[in-house]
Length: 61
Image (cartoon, rainbow, N blue to C red; front, side):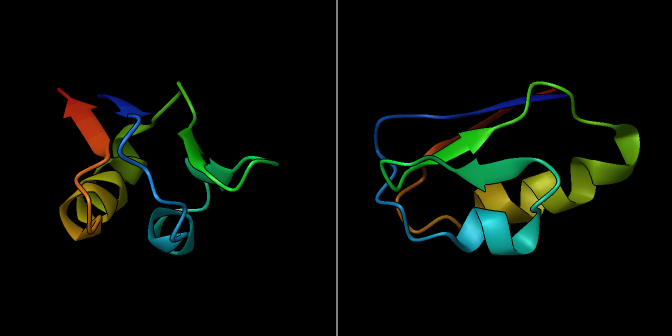
């Protein structure tokens, strides 16, 4: 699984609170995703994507 945060990000931090192992906040206040997503993290990553209020998280299986 791969994930990325697109330009729609508003920096709410929800993804980081759901899955801090994959999502972090930049100095500019926007989210970024780690390129290494383990199988154990896939459910949390999908939950973060589904919870994003602006659909900024793109998930590729």
